[in-house]
Image 1 (tube, one colour):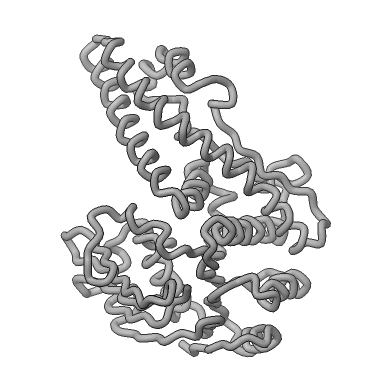
Image 2 (cartoon, rainbow, N blue to C red; image 1 turned 90 degrees about the vertical axis):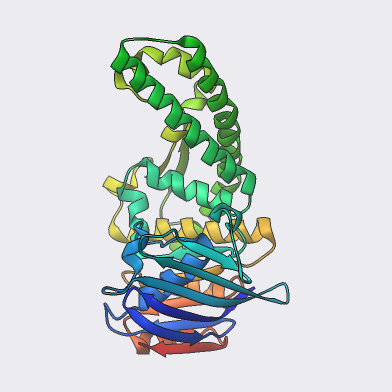
Length: 359
């Protein structure tokens, strides 16, 4: 599978731009702020139906314009697939495959497997648990559409339960029967999500450790630990045990929506005790593990986006990544860099076909 060509209209800083791609390596080079990352984000948009960098969809429309369109052709299973994502101010975003709009964006997730490695990944370390849960969920959802539906249902039921808790507080009342219905529904979805996350992490950790070992030469000991209330007890019991606390807080304080991934180096939080280089190596290993996990489970090499990947990485770590390109580990690659000469030297060393776009 690979991306053949893409057209951008009023997307971020582009009024109109068209690119035709090499099936192996594609590089965007130029000064900062010229739009290299924006092209990568447009490709990401077509896989996930949203921007990787900007959660507010309307802010991806070029200043002064009313809409954006991303139109692309992919080659998948020897078929040409046209994917179009568009948004007009004041209207809902539209995602189409071969001219037919999706009723639900979630139906599209996983159709174009894709992994992005970016400096923005540092949010996985420095931000709260929600960012790391989203990482877990995005990997699992690319392979399991039922999992994504369970997440949507869980969130909906939790919102209803929270609204009920607020109603109890506002009206000085309490109805255990109605609350029990929500508890049972949350438990049904939550236990299943927990089991899938637990199984995913069990498979994912050895892959992550292997990539980290390759990148760093096993100089550091790192740990990836799944944390959940559900290791302590089943969700129904936890909800019942915490009802008094929930009534005071007026929201659901226990459940899979509080799960986290702990990132550690030598058994200490990498956020506090890891250097910038160690953090970056950790994150690259995490994303390469995501790539390998998706490839192994789906049988398809995901598209891989390297945004400013060579910044702050020493030569030995860059060479480890290039070695993986030479070993044909990856499928189609997209790279952004501020140094044209550095980029060309690196991609030439892979002996693969490539195209360089000077923006």
